[in-house]
Amino acid sequence: MSAVPVITIDGPGGAGKGTVSLWLARTLRWHYLDSGALYRLLALAAARDGIDLDDGAALAQAVAHLKIEFRLHADTLQVLLDGADVTAAIREEACARAASRLAVHAGVRAALLPLQRAFARPPGLVAEGRDMGTVVFPDAALKIFLTASVEQRARRRWLQLSAAGVDASLDAILDDLQRRDAQDASRAAAPLRPADDAVVIDSSELTVEQVCARIMGHVEERGLTVGDHPAP
Ligand code: DC
Image 1 (cartoon, protein in one colour):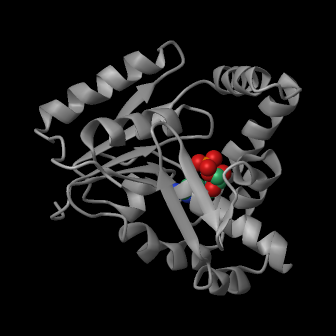
Image 2 (cartoon, rainbow, N blue to C red; image 1 turned 90 degrees about the vertical axis):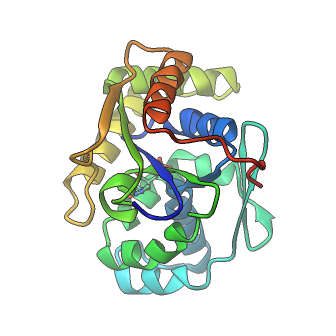
């Protein structure tokens, strides 16, 4: 196991990884990596700089120029690109689609690897994404694969958007999630799949609190402890 303990939370879009990972990082007072945000930021930078999403080499090069800042607040992650707040922009469906497309390039994934590993600092790291347990942190102390039926994930996202006053179609969300799942799971480079030693949790019939309680059970079982200072 690496010196800094890491907990990975992987799974398909809309399974609740974000909520659960943020909660866990806060509770443990560990650092937090939203790796999907890195892919989304690259998608945003590519759109701004006119880089073709099929040009893996140019995209991999662009990673070196990304000026990213993550600010962890009580229950949100503020994201800045070149000093501009892009917290809302990276959550748009178009950005998610572009992120999923550029994530197929092995060169892009390799370029993002050191950036992601640099997040592992004492007292520990909660890292969420698609390949945290399989590729980025294969020695993680605890690996969770959080999943849920695609219908349930689409319904949750629709409820979230409706609550935020966004007029979205449930069918369109379902369609988007299915397409993104297929793309993320079928790519050759680091496809979405549970690590062999991952604990798989299906959240279809569970509340957020129940998922968190289950994860905490595994955290305690492995003797992972709360940090003695709050993660910045
Ligand atoms: O978790 P998310 O929805 O923010 O991720 C957006 C896209 O980024 C996702 O569809 C695939 C890609 N991604 C990835 O390939 N590997 C990761 N570790 C995280 C995200």
